[in-house]
Image 1 (cartoon, helix red, strand yellow):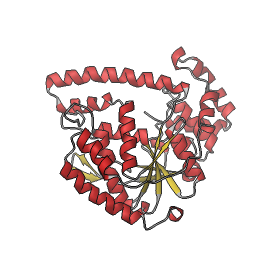
Image 2 (cartoon, rainbow, N blue to C red):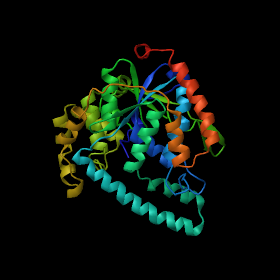
Image 3 (cartoon, rainbow, N blue to C red):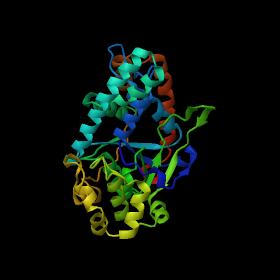
Image 4 (cartoon, rainbow, N blue to C red):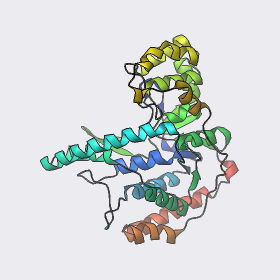
Length: 346
């Protein structure tokens, strides 16, 4: 779900080559959901093994990460820990949304409407504990650093980018990391490099969003940005405040400036919300200002060919020939990365 402030956020397209020699902290859950939603068969069903277990996430982690490593990018995957209590509301909303999507998928299936089937099936995504653990195992076997956050993955990734000079940016499709103070956010990193359009195929390039540029362009500070996000709706208060969109929220934070005054001006609107949608803005604000994080050590391991084959070929029926071919590319990528020490990365 995440925060939606796309309309007002300045960004710039960059070439993937511009990220060579940089360490990026990837929001693992966001990326896994992306793979589960986008890597699918023509009728919208995810990739599966012979036992009908979903493998779309493993395919994305293996093939797309190898391409990024070959591009000279070092990756740190940051996994969510225990979510804050406020996020339970978001989880319930997602479950309700999946129930509706499941019903509409079945209706589309009866009509053999493959476009609708694909659209609704992507909303049925669910990431379970087994998927998470095998994702960590695969990443570790690929020599990619895995960090377990105590709570929110994006908060931990943002913190690591702030305090560790060798890490460059958070990689995520969501904007929440900006509210957590990430100095730089990269979007479209793990997407397919091309997407189908009405006129053919279009290239998908990474986009760079810089927090300082965002604040300067909007004429606000980080506290005002957090307030803006809360009004629009975050994972902690999904509905936000009705009738207040991104541009209206920007007007309000610029007019009233201080968090207390900002939310004083919309107090009646919050009180008018249904009880289950009301929120304490101070509680939400504090989760962004003081999230649970740790100073995690970044450890990049060695490639374990046997473990990769065990997970992909032995357990999930991937083509051994294709996996072996990609392992050669993975080895090539690591040989290139070895030429720089951790202290040389920026």
